[in-house]
Image (cartoon, rainbow, N blue to C red; front, side, top):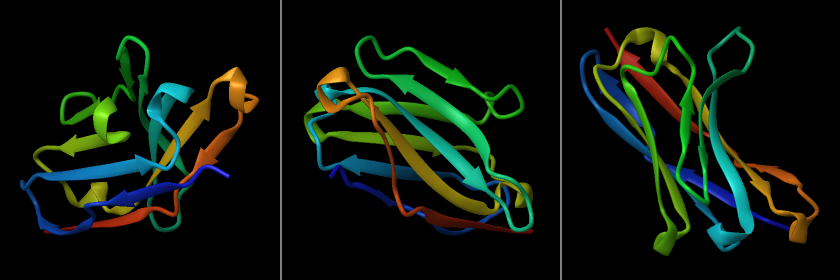
Length: 120
């Protein structure tokens, strides 16, 4: 069983910045990609960004790419999401997902999520 542990959520004012972390119990070298998703109250889960572990290629939701940055630290088995110029509509539970390599049957795992609340 692969465990993902998010941290870094909290209360932030509009215009502020925040960095979320997602640490995996599995060596990040056994993971193909890691992603962030978010789910706001009363809304469907929304994909935020993905990073490929091998070459670090990143992709973002079009509406978020100007303020969100996804990156990783292989040595720490950790992926990050930096959010700038936060807006009240960023309030959501942010979850990370990991897609494993064939060695781990290509399975996908989810973290429990971390709450981000942006006050106006």
